[in-house]
Length: 180
Image 1: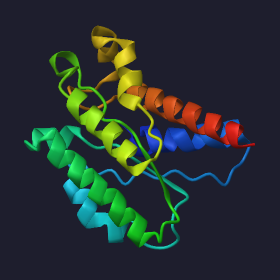
Image 2: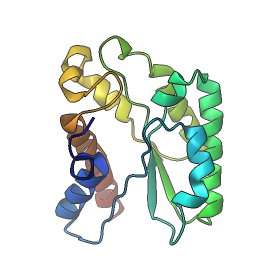
Image 3: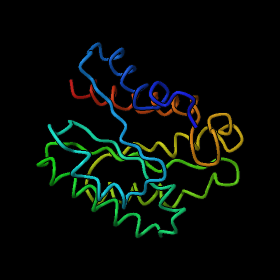
Image 4: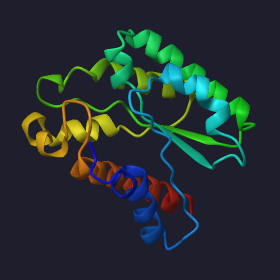
């Protein structure tokens, strides 16, 4: 639902924000998003998506399509954990993983993804890794107030992508500053 996906997706915006805020132009953020993809698809694409040098960090944002595919929260969690395992194997453990919790849907679907967001939190806990609660950040906006950030019931519009990029950049910059 983005008029100019290459310029408006949150990965592109995140890259620009991180470069500006960190004062370092060698930050690269790519989106490997595929419309309609589920985490089960991502598991099959690991070898393709992680060819070449291992990235320093990978963020994951799955759930909506999985739920629409009638997967239970436990099936989703199991697939997500297996996806992380596969990333570790393919990258030789060189890539940090930052799960982003499943984001809410719009309008009547505002609470529909809560169990999948919790599954992401639980998987991150079982892996002893940090996660970014993007779902909670978006829910904090409010059910009705979130509507201007959404292009449809499931997908953020340009304003939503900008919001997501800013939340992720805030978190990453905070982590960098804390590590100094």
